[in-house]
Amino acid sequence: MGAVNTLVITGYGINSHLETAHTARLAGADRADVVHFSDIVTGQTRLADYHFLIFPGGFLDGDDLGAAQTAAIRLRYMLHSNGSPLLDSLREFLDKGKLILGICNGFQLLVKLGILPALDGNCFERQVSLAHNDSARFEDRWVRLLSNPESPCIFTKNLPMMTMPVRHGEGKFVAKGEHCLSRIVTAQLIALQYADPKTGLATQEYPFNPNGSAVSLAGLTDPTGRVLGLMPHPEAFHHVTNHPCWTRGELDPPGTLLFANAVRYLRSQ
Image 1 (cartoon, rainbow, N blue to C red):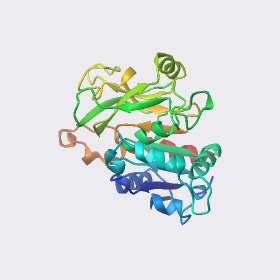
Image 2: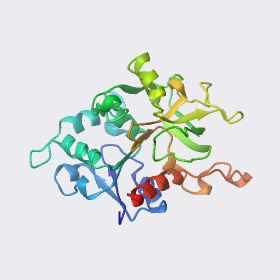
Image 3: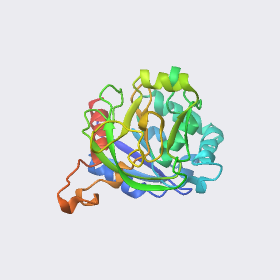
Image 4: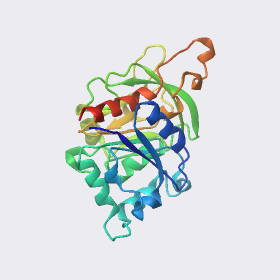
């Protein structure tokens, strides 16, 4: 592949679009365009012209009806100005082997739209969700993250233990049932887990697991590994000075590595 073109969606309460696009450029993307959702609907911007689609963090529609719920309904039923379903464009984007990343509110959107986890190839069927944090409050803190080396996820390949900030009120991962959760675990669709900073192991202990997510899940992929949703914000740690302890010499790997894996994969295709 030649140029890697990245599309970062904005509008309706999204507020992390600029740093997300900046991080994509730092990771080597040739283009990282920030585009309002309405420009896609009207046809001014076409998903087909891009290889990497990112739904950033924020508060879509004020989180009315639940985080990203309104946006999921919008994407599911809205038509392009030419009358074709917007969902068809998303389906075509996925079918062509391109990459999708959902960060925080973007993750909430992907699960409520049913793009993740897509068990049995059932894309656009809701199988999991993200519920209110067990703490019953908004969590704004830095967490340790453990990547799963057995996961098919392209974004998390060979990542070391990482540190990223979370800032959400609805980040608790829940599955449709025990069978669904078991299948996610067995299929190695857990891409990232919250970890205890002392042991380096996945944990359910608060505040290391800030929301009480089942199986410590912080990031979820689909069976192809080309879609990732995560609650922590990699774009908020794109430079060493973003880390609160950088002056103490804590030089943790930046979240840019996750974007770099995506760009590297696309260039190899």
